[in-house]
Length: 638
Image 1 (tube, rainbow, N blue to C red):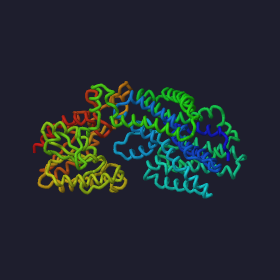
Image 2 (cartoon, helix red, strand yellow; image 1 turned 60 degrees about the horizontal axis):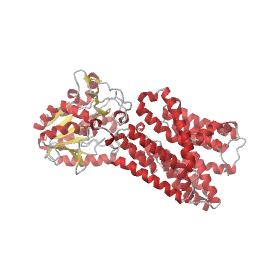
Image 3 (cartoon, rainbow, N blue to C red; image 1 turned 90 degrees about the vertical axis):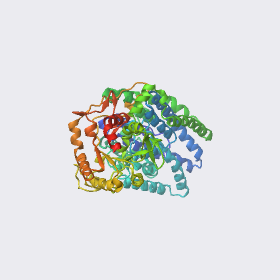
Image 4 (cartoon, rainbow, N blue to C red; image 1 turned 45 degrees about the vertical axis):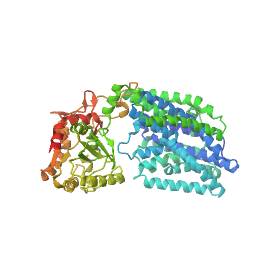
């Protein structure tokens, strides 16, 4: 088994890391550059398995030494990156974004980033990838989780004299599960370690091929084919490409290059000085590249995405990576691989985790901002924020100590109107209540869960609980939904229609009025929300921070004619329902209240009114509430 230094593997690292960097920089020619991570997994599978097997066969393997080596290799640069990113966040991020970064920092240090991102991918208001400063740490967390199980598997395999069988078996099972589940559980197969074991196994399998096959004559062809597979993956694939292709093709290409070695012209190219130099710093380059991109876009805005901005970032990445490799990585490699070293790293990690988690609990340290900035942030939060948790998974707003005077049901569109209703109910000295967990949930009788629902289990529980609670009440009721999310085609009705038909929704709404509107209960139905897709929403850039940063350009208002066209079908359907229950139902259409004569606003006195394209922030909710105050009061007076 080859145990000497393999310079061409450092060259392969260069190819992998540059693919990832160019992809994240936004180079169109590297739309599949994310596959560089798959190449890294194969390299790790080969090198780690080779070292473990050598030690086991020489009867010198020690778990303590193995993990100490991994710690001194991985943790110094990781801790430095997290700390530097955290400090930059304190300077340039709002409390909301800083709280997110604090959580990311904690999970990166505890090697559970991939689990965090997998779980958060299921959340209704999940952060976009470009709002996560340490997103790239998911692969490091996954790899460190791999290190927990792989030595045990190899140790058992050697002692049972079946290491090849176990490695192949683990790889086949992992690959089969990943491909089978990738369509319906794409986030899990992307982020979670069990579905990536096959890539490490591909790397490990090279060890056994090396022992049985000397590819000297085929080295040139293997290396060329391997490079072609990897580079083609970077150029051809996109994030929407099939999971099997984007993982297996570059992984097999990497395995072919490792098997071929450097005894060929392309192998010698990979083993040449420039490739080796970048390869040796590839870990630091991978760590620093995404935070640099993230903060460049936060601080400089669109200028960071220009060609000059991209080149400047790349130069900064290379400089930072070489400095980190020289002054952060290298000094720690001389530490003895023992329990004492592990203990030191654990203690240092623990101290930083206390700081990062404390920042999370401290809600991103809003004390970093002045009073005016903190007031602005409160206006830019989701319109649901003026709500206090109470029993039955609900929250209260208005005068929370006063008698119940209004119940609200619906999804996140209902939640946003808390900001509209809160000052009105406080003025009337009554309390309002709404579910805390209804985002994305059609709280209507008989509608069911649409095909793409974000969390069917939670929604079913919330719908049943909310309908049960409002059935027992005669309090005035307001219903608001993101109506266009519940088109017939979401329930298998209407074939491939994309025009938007609402027969099932209309029937469910009528059923709801009959079911919970007994005894003449008064019901207010909110019409179609006016979306603002023309605006660019990025909380990391929009919210104020201690140091100035580029903010998105002012959002242009929406033409009222366009808004009327978009809301007409839904509002017509709601009018039909109202005509069936004229004595019970009041209808409040945002198109009639929120918009002016010719346009629908998106900003007011320089403050944005939306938190994303389809939801008001507190400022927007209050603006709408002020404009619709007479209609709300008229409904509550009836």
